[in-house]
Image (cartoon, rainbow, N blue to C red; front, side, top):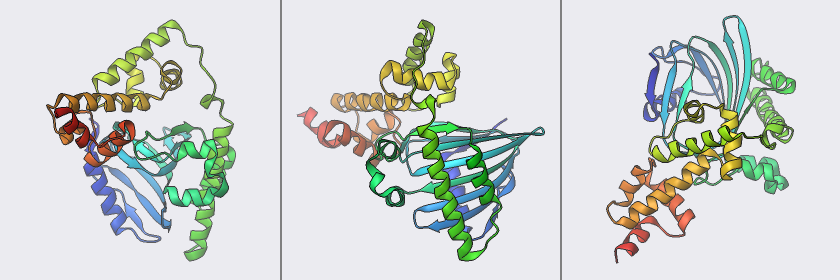
Length: 314
């Protein structure tokens, strides 16, 4: 049976880990989840690096609600049954939609994870802050964040290994690690520029289009607890890449952009009916935070949800 955690349980564990971690401190992974350790490094305000080596005792499922998200990237080196697989994930800042995060157990995973707040990222890019690829990574807290996954290039793999085997201590270590964090970010941006999967169109068959429309129906039925991208792809019988790219071709937006739009429209209908309070309407469409819902509603419709609801009751 997989280990299941709520977002609150996972966040509490992260808070405890961060609170006890200091510069150079290594924290043991919870024995109830598996064996391993994490090395947390606060490089400077708004830039955090975590190096971990973990083997979960079973598959792990974490149920996550809508939440604001910084820029983040992770490089994983997965060792399983004598084989080694490498991968990376990149996320922009913005709204991370509700989903089910699944991590496989019984495999050793060495990870380099970096969180970067928007302000230091904007300072780093300087005059390039209005470039399309930068704007795509820096979205408002009401917009679904950018996400991308890929296979590390040789240059990325080398930088990751240099982080894992940093030969320095103290100030020199911090400066060295921060330089590698920005080096990896530059390599990720370059990989996005050269990745044809992000821009090319798929030749969709009639059956593919039907499956994508079916996926949209499933999303509308599950506004409160939507499936993850992989779960949705499995439910309609296509791979997640075809669903991701094909969904944009068919509907002109991402899967979670579509979900967000329908959540907002459904919340507007609920408020217009006068049957629910703002808090209840937010919960009915899957928002965990009334504040995030109010900001998203204001951005979409130009008015606070409470004002909108009162206006409809007059």
